Length: 587
Ligand SMILES: NC(=O)C1=CN([C@@H]2O[C@H](COP(=O)(O)OP(=O)(O)OC[C@H]3O[C@@H](n4cnc5c(N)ncnc54)[C@H](OP(=O)(O)O)[C@@H]3O)[C@@H](O)[C@H]2O)C=CC1
Ligand SMILES: O=C(O)C(=O)Cc1c[nH]c2ccccc12
Image (tube, rainbow, N blue to C red):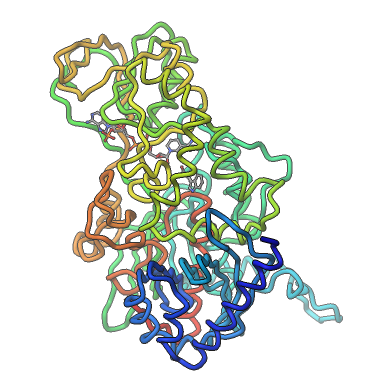
């Protein structure tokens, strides 16, 4: 069908939808939805991130939120398209307090999936683009203060004379993205980091590069230079974060440690004790505390019996390359086959070592070229006709309940493109999988964000036998070997534990308290009961980009592409609270 006809169809549906909402006639609204239907709202109706599944849940959500949201001005953005049997379109709308964007899938003229997200608060629009500020009074001004002097004054006051509204812990990409957005919204914010911006990348093994194409991973407001490499090195990424902080005027307190943070239920304020580089500890009193401390917790070092008598050297992958050890000619055993295991194994091979990987569980392996072609380029490549904003919306438009069926065509395409490599890996005893429900990367990313590898070379070395693979768990370590659960022994001069990280809730307990960590519960995962993501079903990432069980506590974590979008959601929620707007949270 012609695109124009499809767009007219969507417009007609939106008109009926809009009219029914305006009349608050829920039966009329629900009649526009198919029997299987989903409405995912991100902050625009619910002041929460929530997927209503089926008509009953949509009715309940609307009963609670429609009167205050008062949506209007629904329109189609761009042209509708036919995709996987649905008519799809991006939409825009307004609520009483803000402006929203969304995405719609119609099947047989009825709504199958609807996404609504807030992107702007009325009266508090970012001063960007056409509404940018002049930055200088164009009339003569006696005793004019320089920009630098004003900035210096601001820096000196914030946290001392003037309390920040928000304290962000962690100056990695998620912390600085959120801080940049809060600055654009005029919400006083301090980012506290025990190191300095860029460390999250710099303090890693030397061979580390970004593994997703950088054109997908732009920061808010500021794209990478047009000639930025597709896979920048860790130091380029570190420099980028440092430069971003500088250019976006983010207030970072570097080399400052959060000693404790407690929420006072009376004053609705946090007391965050921070030790500054001069050794003095002072207390910040923000209304909101945002942990941007990363997706992953402390290094997980297994407690293998015999590790203490091992005669060679052993380290966790997070320490790999520190200390400048010489690995040439050494027998190196890498335990763990996630991204770090692959990267470290390849690094050791490139340094002339004899490398064996020990694999406990199967891994999703995809060639980087295939990752780009299947997941990334249709949305984000320079040649994609879609704007970054629309691409971001499309990424969050799938309800988690539908991950497996929606991913099926992608998984088929991966098998078509990378089947040969997978076959060669299997012949070498390396186990490849596509997640428990066959959803591939999308399932793994959203459940645990572990158990996958985008090939940067290591898979070829495994397929050719140059990196050896042993299957199974580790029984123990002896003076010069790693003993596997089948009793076999692998000789070792070096053991690298590429065994991932401990639960991130430990970090939460350390920054706040064990009680708060317990109250908040696990982070990430949507309660699928699959691939190490425990139930019960939540249908949304636990505690991410939305209010938590602890008042004033937020978690802004995720990959670069996720936090570019998530930072907008969190920033708007914080801005609304800063301005005292009503934010009734629908749970
Ligand atoms: N350049 C980049 O972009 C990089 C990104 N990352 C990111 O970090 C994430 C985490 O990666 P990674 O550090 O590899 O951690 P993962 O958690 O993905 O991998 C840990 C590996 O160690 C295994 N393991 C854990 N404990 C044991 C044990 N006692 N005995 C045997 N095996 C064990 C795990 O097996 P099992 O599955 O059975 O638990 C798994 O294979 C990645 O998914 C990626 O998002 C990491 C490195 C580089
Ligand atoms: O592996 C990571 O850390 C990522 O950020 C991967 C990722 C998140 N969202 C995506 C969408 C398409 C391809 C990869 C990713």
